[in-house]
Length: 417
Image (cartoon, rainbow, N blue to C red; front, top):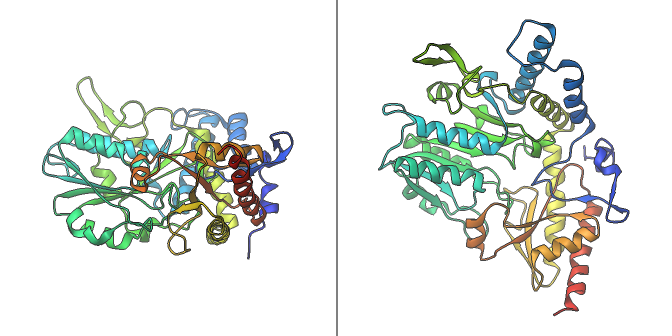
């Protein structure tokens, strides 16, 4: 059954407001962060109003209720991605999730399966967000491992002709985005996974742009670790997820140390609690975790397959419309094969920031800049692009408004050329 964005928008209080002197808010920047439904806001507020206490501490009723709510949210996350609850780790962001992994691997002692040394290799891609690139650069610098990468072809897809050369027998880690935050490309995982596991490497998936929009089941996906953020999935800021296979989490050393993550402590040594507690030192982001659980319940009620189809329909409407406008260049796939609801483009003679400000004057919110992907922008030969990213609350009329806005910007800026 098709989505009804008009009805869905009624669940989101932000769409009750106007912007720029009374204009309707057309929010096309969900790739940066999503808007929040009442269900999420209420879940977080109600936790603070009625259940606030430190989890996993205390024998009083509030502590029990807070712990039940927090662990209940973990169960909701696990169900949403097809995982076991002991494989789901709460973090403050996807960025922290990936840093946790990289730093934990850097802390691994000789003999641990995650220990890296000179001669080993870490593999990434040219289309990575900085959050899935810089931590691996730093791990390479710390350990002496070599950093290698897959290049992006002219269509905006990975060049896998070098698969066996890039993922060589020395490879220990392959870190890859599921869906590009710039190009919208959904990467083909099967070939990469097969080769990575042939050489004994672990595969880390940045799923920030896919989990909120696609049905993802880690029990069949085949990756070893996966990270995503809550705020892109209708959830609160300040909460992210790291998922890992249980047997790998057992072998991975901690990253943060302190309360809650220990099994025993003496004055000279400590032992660690099992996962996920081993990776959740200190009092966690309890209310945010509860809010994320509510967000994922909301998405499940709408249906991920329906959301993805809706977004692809809007994406193709935008791509087809942009292709009819002279002077517009689209970056990334221009068909609906293995792509998501993100479209980056440039308009001749108009800087993306100028275009973004012009669109903002019409009430249209888009992202402009390098999108935290400098190496990819360099490969594309641009310093910045304009990006529209769709979600379940967008509709066809908003796509037409964006297309009209691009045409209007061309006329406006032509006066100054």
